[in-house]
Length: 429
Image (cartoon, rainbow, N blue to C red; front, side, top):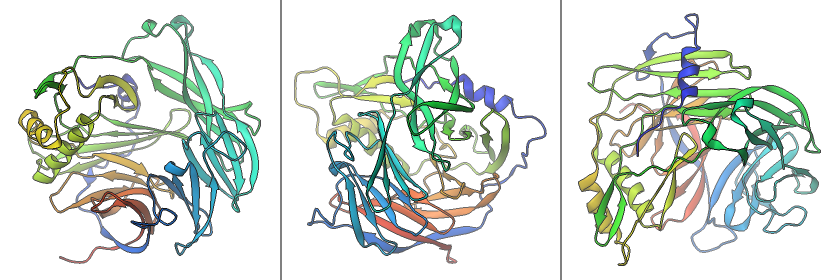
């Protein structure tokens, strides 16, 4: 599948003026930290203690931990020591029930849950008592008049002032063919009140054209089946829409192995540049761990009947197992076929993924290094480097601040466990 570089990224980066900070400091020469486990929650045998599908985590001001268990359509609440306190919600369409757990969080003394299927936000107090149900149907926002195109903006998260921020929803109208594949829409950042009505506009966001681009990726044959040819991880920029702006990570891979530059840009709500930082890094070649990880992701998708592939959050292709009347190939056959077909460049992109810490930090997951860990390059809220945190590859981070990490780990039987780690200085090797 051909990679698509969205025009919004180029526009954002060229908007950064000469006055923006670009010190070119090293991403490799920073303080080193590691994780020490403190709490582990779960069970292999008891469904009341164990988890099936951990979705997200949030922590309130008292250290209580809120965990979405998707298989239960519920939020489990634990105290700071890991003792289970209560469960909120459940599957259904009645008050306090959920059709899906799209997102949730704790704001002050209020637990909010966004349900995109029922198009509403449900509010509870921290004891689990139902407070209110807010409509999240949204409003249609016209795009530039000449396009004849509108998109629905829906409330999705609670702000500290009790109002709700918005994101583009799936409801669209107009003829998408009037927009080109690289076009973007300039959408207002609407603010909704507790009745679901628009009360303010807090800046603007740029949004990729929500047009489905069905391409014809290269295929490989495995037995009697056709599958999408595996591709290396993209080095396209990472773009994250924030409540108060955007974060852009420009991460072009090195072609030569010479020292290269990683650029991180933070834009404000009115598209002003809050910071732009550049960091030098030493390119790393693909090792066996990195290749195994790539192949495993393809084997997992190849075992399914099909899937939607996304680039920077936009649906751009349909892939998966193709034609043929025989049974789907087994995982061993898929593994061999994908390894034979994968054409990797020599060097990895400098960042594989990223996330935001509760304290405003930016966490950039660095290249695979063959040690069974990920190295996360952490930036302060102003873009200055804080340090590098070594994290077990088995840990998927769901929440972090300056001292603590919460995440989910799968054991050898694919059972998920919720774990809390403390961030400490790395021991000398």
